[in-house]
Each structure stands twice: as C-alpha cells, then as structure tokens.
Image (cartoon, rainbow, N blue to C red; front, side):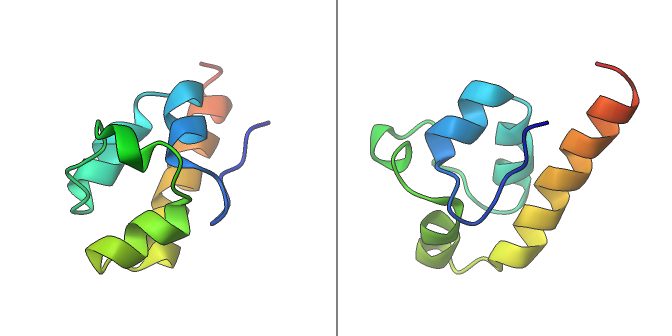
Length: 72
C-alpha cells in the first residue's frame, strides 16, 4: 500500500494517483503542474506555500485509505 510521508516527492505522489492533485490545489497549492515542483518533497512544497504539511498529509492519506477501502 502506498503511503505518503513528508519526504514523498510531488512527482511520486502524482505518478501514483493524479487525484492527489485536486487535494493539493484545494489546500492552496496551485502550482501542481509546475516542472520544478516535481522534485520537491511534500514538506518543502508546503513550506514554500505557507501551508501546514500535517493537514495536507492527513488529507492525502485519508483519500488513499478511502480508495483502498473501496477497492479502487
């Protein structure tokens, strides 16, 4: 099972599930498609945007857990 951590890069997350992009944009991170963001960790990207990484991390993992639970 894929779990996102603070060290997971934006590219790794989006390669695993593009639905994560919606959660990132909803949290205020509107540069999801920016080529320079792909190598950033979730923690780095949140820091640059002044977003609480723990809140975003929880939302992403809740989303992934729900998808797995639903069998998708």
